[in-house]
Length: 497
Ligand SMILES: C[S@@+](CC[C@H](N)C(=O)[O-])C[C@H]1O[C@@H](n2cnc3c(N)ncnc32)[C@H](O)[C@@H]1O
Image 1: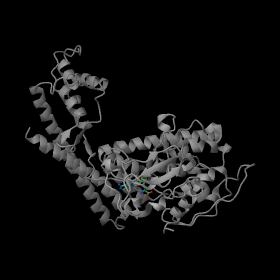
Image 2 (image 1 turned 90 degrees about the horizontal axis):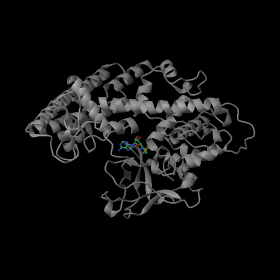
Image 3 (image 1 turned 45 degrees about the horizontal axis):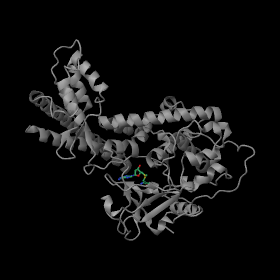
């Protein structure tokens, strides 16, 4: 037995599946700064199988479909999984405000789980079991809040009335009772959102857009077909489900549409991210597995007490923050400083000529996503920045027609025929890179300063700053610190050029 009853209940549930492999033989659950994580029990031989979760214990479109009527089949994996989690959270965590059960359901009793960090209060008596409860022991192990994710911050920066209007909440929404409308907190969350750098804000808006689209699809389907299944759909339950899906799903080939090839997977979903690791969860015919790094993987071997990890992707901190609610900092080689707006500003200042050139860049797939990076050495602007600046500084004989001839030198460069457009063009490109770095450094210095001022003010205010808010603030500042470090590194590199 561990000291975590939720983990023990999850392992007990997994034992009920044929061919299960007990994860506790190889790994131990720990609580650390990343929440929970798994560490090696003893020195683990390279390549040895550590975790094997039977396909029947995974939550994905294949395992969900049989639990729902055909009318739900239009949902994609994220929507369906989020809906399922929402209904289950409501059923098991708030069984007192459910509508009466549907007729003709066979029922038995499902197991209740004791309290723990992730189930902070003892759970109420569960309702009589229905087929959809099959995965509850797994779902009970999922986080119940996401305080470090910017989508949570932006929701907390709104009043309930604004949330109702923004997300079309119905007057009967069962989940709004759990929402605490706190004016002071709202102000702080508003400031936190405004403190984020441009790249993080853009990504945070994208996450919110995806969430909103999924919520709209699901609430509309629920309005038409909700009576066909047991349960109540609440906005905040769906949000909790969606954030779990977004932060915990792993790739799983279901032979369907690409966007649906994902799964929630117990135990493996406790493994935290380390950038650059090559060992990954690996599907086998009947299970999802995780093995110790092989000697050829380049990943460090797992010695007793060391943490299992894999890479969630080649993600910079702005993305890790908005999608997963954490940052890495200077050890994240994928960190970049976004410079789109400075490049855009140059083209705008070129008037009609700039517009035509932007059109060419768009057509060739080179517009947007322009960054500076420190790694790999030497620090440099991305290829996309250089391509854009080389076109920006290309002299056009006439603006009447943009002929292939007038752009030939630039096309030769982007097709790899030549290293630069010309030496004169390249000198101007380098000067623009220096100017862009200067602007990026200035902006990041101001961002860092703003962060520091805000924290000082929060600390002066009567109630001080709680640990959670200070942790969030620190992540926002880390992204600015990284912008500054990277812009300075590229500036230094280009100073002598
Ligand atoms: C798939 S879960 C991993 C297990 C998780 N720590 C838990 O407590 O259940 C992903 C979440 O873990 C946390 N996480 C993962 N890697 C992290 C890291 N390197 N640093 C901080 N938090 C991390 C983030 O909250 C992320 O959203």
